[in-house]
Image 1 (tube, rainbow, N blue to C red):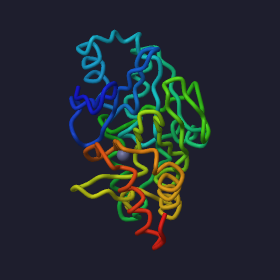
Image 2: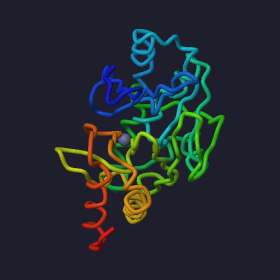
Image 3: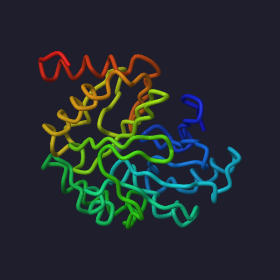
Image 4: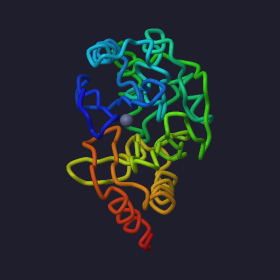
Length: 237
Ligand SMILES: [Zn+2]
């Protein structure tokens, strides 16, 4: 497990394709995303190795219902007893993950096949808790609705410590802060509006950004986000 900043850890044990995080707070620990369906035992072992028995997990937050983020949610719920939380609009996808299709038409047949591999097949779950935009969580995180990549995607902001957990609302590939990949983002216009919202409303409250894919940004994240939004909309945020 790799510390990004105090009390925020990356499960680097599950590899680099997709990220899942551990958030420490007064009440225990919360998982933010759960990796692919094959990641559950690795995540459980990493928790125990870090000194957290599984029952210390208070909650499993899903930024969205893609198989690489919710893949191990059902198994980790059984292992920890922790409730699963997602956005109210995302509930349908989390309960029916097979509804998710890539944007690119050509990829759809491939996606349908790959999804049948046990290692890629996300087990559906019914979330115990659903949230809406602006909701404050006991973890010290504010829920920010950031639709586009999926309809009920959320990001999470620790306003005190200036940390944004972006999920796939943003990506950070090859050193470049960018919108989520178009191939897997059915509503890019909305994804861009979400970026504008993050930049305009919260840009001045962000230093650190962590992503579903790509390395973290450890400082000036808000300024970089505002610069990107200004470029996309050809208008100063
Ligand atoms: Zn993803």
